[in-house]
Image 1 (tube, rainbow, N blue to C red):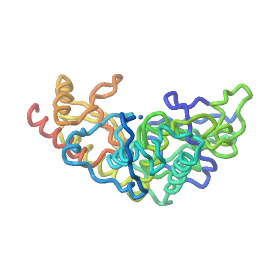
Image 2: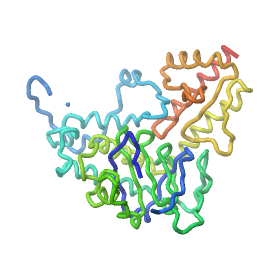
Image 3: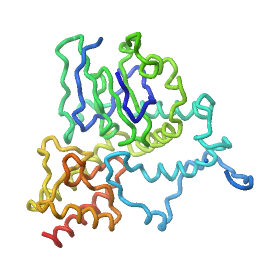
Image 4: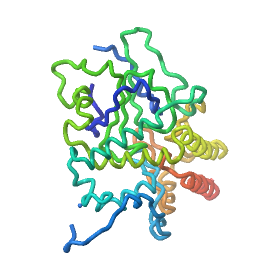
Amino acid sequence: MAMSANAPHTLLLKNPSILKTSTSTTPGIHVFPIARATAKPISIKCSYSATVVAPPTSASAQDRVFNFAAGPATLPENVLLKAESELYNWRGAGMSVMEMSHRGKEFLSIIQKAESDLRKYLHICANETIHGVEFKDYPTPKNKDSLLIADMSSNFCSKPVDVSKFGIIYAGAQKNVGPSGVTIVIIRKDLIGNAQEITPVMLDYKIHADNNSLYNTPPCYGIYMCGLVFEDLLAQGGLVEIEKKNVKKAQILYDAIDESKGFYRCPVEKSVRSLMNVPFTLEKSELEAEFVKEAAKEKMVQLKGHRSVGGMRASIYNAMPLAGVEKLVAFMKDFQAKHG
C-alpha cells in the first residue's frame, strides 16, 4: 500500500487495538481484501521551565492573519511560540531539533514522548455521539477476510472514534496535527509482516515497526511539532473537549450561512456537514472574487474554494480559534449588508 505522496515518512503506532482516535471528514474509506549561525558565538541559557511560553506581544499578534486554508493549515499559536522559544537551543541541548541525530538521545526523547502523548488521549467514551459529515457509523466488512482501511487526514484528532473497527488508519499531519511531511499510521498488529516480496522497503510497515519509525532519517522537526500539538491537545482536555469546541465553531458558521436568506448557500445536506471544512457559495457568484479580496484586507485568507468546485471554503481545523470564526461571520454579515 502506498503512503501519502507528500509524506513519505511514518510515525507508526503499533498495537492500536487498545487505542481510539479521530476520523476523517472526507469519505476516504475503503474495504480491501487482505492479500539554522550568528557572526559571533553567543551564550544562551535554557531550562526546562522555558516550556511555559509567554503570550505574543500585541504588535506580533496583530501581524497574524486568520488562515482558513485546507492544508497545510494553521497551527496553534502557543505551539508556534513554544517552537520559536526552543528553535536555537532545544532545552539546553546546545542545538536545534533540526540539527539533531535522529538516533541521538535528544530526538529519541522527542519521538517517544510524541507517541506516548498521542496514545494518552486516543480513546473513546462509549456513549459519545458523532457530528458533521463524518460517518455516523462505519461499514463492517461482511467477508471476514476483508479489511476496513481509512484515510483520516481531514479531521485526525478532531474528535474521538473507535479505531478497533479498522485494519489500517493513515493520516497526513498537515491538516490538524503539524506541518506537512509527516504521515501517521495506526495498524493492527496482525497485519504487519504480510507485505509481498516485491514491496519496496519504505512501503513495508514491518520495517517501520521493527525500527520504531527510525529506519531512515525521519522528518525530525515535523515530528517535534506534532509532539507539541499533542501536548496542546492534552492540555485542552483531550479529544472529547476538542470535539465540543469544533462543534461550536462549525455551528456558528453554518448558522450564519443558513440565516442569510439565500445570500450564502451551503451545498451540503445538514446531516452530513463537515466540522472541519465549510464550503459555501454566494447567490451572486460575480461577488465571490470581491468577497475574497475584502476578506484578505481584514486579515482572513485562503477562503477561495477548491478549483474543481469554486465558491468559498473555510477550513476551521482544531487550531482555528473561535475568534477567527466569529470574525468571519461578522465580515459575512457586513458583506451581505453592503452587497445584498
